Image (cartoon, rainbow, N blue to C red; front, side, top):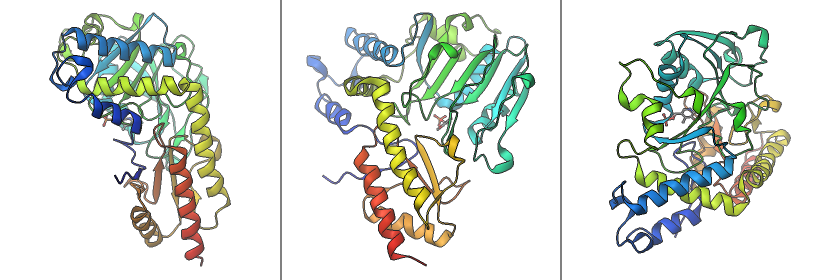
Length: 360
Ligand SMILES: *Cc1c(COP(=O)(O)O)cnc(C)c1O
């Protein structure tokens, strides 16, 4: 069996153990005589699966009981619209522009109300997290929006903005469960599953109960948090199989020691790569040091042809999907929770080899 080290930004690598369990349970889940794919979402078996997934996620993130956990569809993109549709009661929100995903969220929100962009790092190609000055925040905003980890540029917040009584909303798609967060600091957290939780198809929303309320009647039923909250994510058919795999990933993470243990491993993994980048004469990281992501590591040689050759030769060594996002160029190694330390070590080994062979 030839498994590669997959550095894809998403959909991305899953723990091998999880895939093996899914394989073993594929035809007959726990004596049910059927695959999870074939089960009614109203069956007692599926009830067990979705409840376990929720309980384990609550344990992992220490989610208080006054928060609902929702398993929705439509990806993070749908949340760009659902957030303003449900939360913009006064018609005003603050956003921080830290890159492409923030920008998309901002333009969706503008369809529903006034958006105040309090800070941006666009002036330097989103290579840093801008300084936030609470004096520029709108005191009467419905919420304050950030993207905790910027998948394309490889930046992340190392401290959260102090928003006072205004609820903090976070797109955590690419770093949920990778480091410890205090959920009580947020009003709403959302994340598409396909980076750090499971297969594409399910989007997790963690929302404080007081933010769940009736909305304008013209908001489509499927886009109302209240509907999903009242029906425990089973209003209509949920993405059953994706939720099941997320559940297996949560179990895997718990066995490993939970998020604090995972964070430690992630810090180790990222340090291996960043230390090499800081000392290399050929490869350079592109992000301001203090804002570096633990999950997505972009780097360049400064020479497009050399970049392309690196990506190609890495692929021949089983180190795949290292090409940078089309808007940034160069390379990007996504080293999510499921990327083993060995994968990062192999990558650095190959970078050393490549540098030695191509010394200018
Ligand atoms: C991948 C990603 C998205 C888009 O997710 P979809 O599920 O494709 O809608 C949004 N935000 C961030 C931070 C991402 O990494």
